[in-house]
Amino acid sequence: MPYGAPDHPVLLPHPDLGLARGCEHCLGWGTVVTRDGEHALCHICQPDPGNDEGTTGSAPSSAA
Image 1: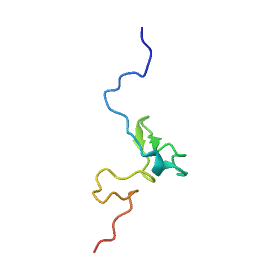
Image 2: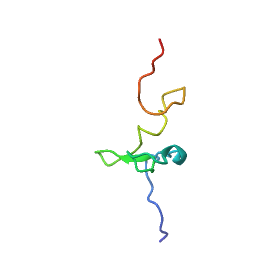
Image 3: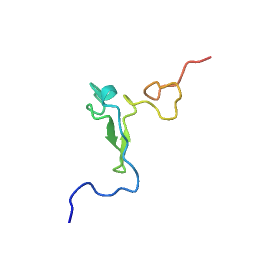
């Protein structure tokens, strides 16, 4: 029987470790564990996948 990572129906997020370096929220891992036990990208240091500008965090844009 081969050993290894179990098969997951949902792919785990792949953080940018360069952006995660020095983040105090995720401790440099780039991911956090939610209350449901799921892995999610850190909302402090990782870019928002829905944001086309590529900025980090979930702060609202100040475009007028």
